[in-house]
Each structure stands twice: as structure tokens, then as C-alpha cells.
Image (cartoon, rainbow, N blue to C red):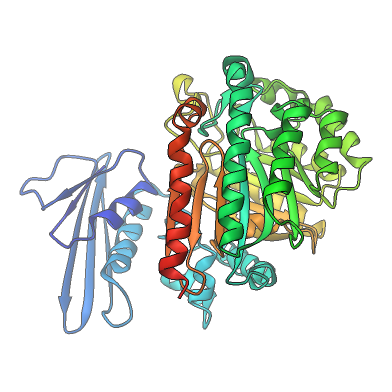
Length: 480
């Protein structure tokens, strides 16, 4: 789909709206004298008597549709007026209505606070969002307010990244390495990670920052041996003052990596939350997506964790996996609910360019099936007394949907809320880690990126420590 612009300067936003309906979008400045026969959208913006007027003519497969929208310039932006015109034209053209309307950002829940006078009106009338998604956003905002308000100007969170997995899932785009292919790097990686943790701890303590939450993610942190995991966790408790933390999470992830020894280490080092991520409770789908564990491994992991004193267990499921069906997803959700985890995160499959899934192009559930999966999940979770508490969206997510975390009341994962809301600074250690610096009493955000690949992280480790100096410089500039 070629999107042509009449010099209005809103090409970026126009392209994003077009991508809600078409996979391959190209934005071109200027309106051609002779448009191509098919696959185009002509976009126009004009200003007259204080009104923004937008028009979109879209054509595909021999069908031409038009969308027109006008609003007062003191009430709306040209980008949003054009977005509504394009949305109307493309909805007519394709017969599809993306559930989040013209919203294309990752964090729609943050818009609730920005439009607190009438959030439902903003979503439904101003953004063309479907009513159930608008209600979901408002509910999540309400369910996370207390967590966000618990953060102070000197609060921060700590993320520890372990970029290794037993195998790589077909849909995975994270920069993680399989233990088989990169096992020789693990010991050196752990050694460097401990050094980064020690150095970063000094930076954080010198700035007087208080660690509120700790999160071990990946990859699969439990891909490490019990001894390696113990070294990393002891480095955290040695280098950071954890006396005031509110939660400590380890994303165990793959159930086949759980052992009693590793759980001993996790528990003894102070973690009080853990994740077991089946993704599906069907062995045939697990095999199809490249996961080496079985459903029995999931039950075994839950049994091991259930004998311990963790405050909360999370389980991840994915709607839209290759080969799955509405019936299969609903079956998986029902089996997970029977295990009674305190948290259940419902992801929607997102197709990234670097994922293996792009090589063999498997058949995926269509948008209607994915929406039915999510509707069932939200209905059952709500009826089961779970509340939605965080949400984020991604490019190329199936059905233009979302990823939503649900929990029993009082069992929300604070780190997830802080990460998505960007409430306060998140200091990241490890390969692929991104430190997100948040101005203590303002809205400025800056990022510090670690090298993505483990071999880069190890080979250029001096750069990693040098970059941590930017944390001190940021607070020097923006703490006043």
C-alpha cells in the first residue's frame, strides 16, 4: 500500500494508520497525477476557518473508498484528524475495524490519565477505539494507581538479564542464545555480569537511589546452573541495598529448567515471586513452536514451586500460536486456571522480522479467532476474580490486539507496572539490557543500551561500565 501525502507533513502518522490494515506500507510525499491502478491511499489536509479538514481516498483490488473528517483546530491535531479519515476509508475498504482504533502506541493506558476528564470519550469518540478495549484501559489504570503512587523521586528498579534459553521458540525475537549453541559463553558471561552488578550498585548507592523492585528476566534465568544463579543473586544482594524492596521476581520461564537446587537458591536469596511460562498446555503446539518441554513438565514445575513460600506465581499464555485454535487456547487457559497461579499474563502472538517463524510461514489463527481467544480469556479471568493491571501493545501483533497481565487483587507485579508506565528509573544489567532513566520530578526519559549479543557484551565489556557513568550524569542534569 502506497500512501501519498499532499505535503501535510503527517506522513509518519499516516503510515502507522495504514499499517493497521496492510503489511507492506510505503509513504510518499506528493500526490501523483496518475495514481496506480491499485494499492494506494491519497491523503489530503487543509485548514479553513479554524477547521482541519482531512480526506483519504484508498483503493485496493478494484475497490475505491473515501473517508472524510473535520474538526476544530483548537480541539484536535492534524495527525489525528487525518488518522480518522484514513481509518474510515480503510475500514470500508477492508471490512476490518482494528479494536484500538487509530491508537498505534505501545502504552495506551497512559492516555487515561492524560484525558482524565473523560477517558472513555477520548478512546471511543476521539480515537475510534472499541468500547471493550477502552474499558480495559480504564480498568487497568485504576488497578495500577496505588502501585504507581508508591514510587517516589528517589525510587528505581533493577533488571538483570540472562540471555540464554534451552531452545529458541519459533516466534522469539529476543536476543537470546540456546544453551547448546552458546554454552561456552555462559561462565564468562556470569563473571562479567557480576562485575557489572557490583559497579552499578556503587553508582546507584552514590546517587541515593532506593531499589523498589528486582526482576530477573531473559531469556531463561533458570538456564544457569544453581551455582551460577547463586553467584549472580548474591552479587545483587551484596551490591544493592535491598532493605526497602517491595518485590523480587525471577522469571523462571521454561518449566524443564526447574530443579529443587535452583529453587533453593532463588528462595534463599530473597526472591518472592516466580514465573512458570507454559505458553500453551498442548504438547503438539509446544513441539510446533520449538519448545522442548511438555505439559507434564509444567505440572511438575508447579508442584515444586507450590511446596515453597513464594508470594506469587505467574503463568504466561499466548493467543494465536501456530497450529492453535480457539478451542485449543481455551483448553490451555482452563488447565492453567486449575493450577491457581496468582498472576496470568495473556500475550498475543507478535510476528517480528528476526523470528524463525518467518522462514516457514506456518498457518496462524486469523484475527477473528484471536479475538475470540482473548474474549474467552478475559471473561474467564474476570469471573475467576482476577483483575487486569498492566497492558502493552507491539507492532505486528496479531489482530492488532494487546498483551495483558491479570492478577488476584493485591498480587500485581509492581515491576511490570513500573516498566510499562515508565514510572521511575529502571537500571538494567546484562546483555540486551536497556537502562531507562526517568527524570525524578519530570517527564524526561533517556536510555542507555547494553550490547545485545552475549559475545559482544563479553568482548566489549569495558564499554558497558563506561556507559553506566551516564546514569550519574543524567541525575546531575535533571535532579534539580
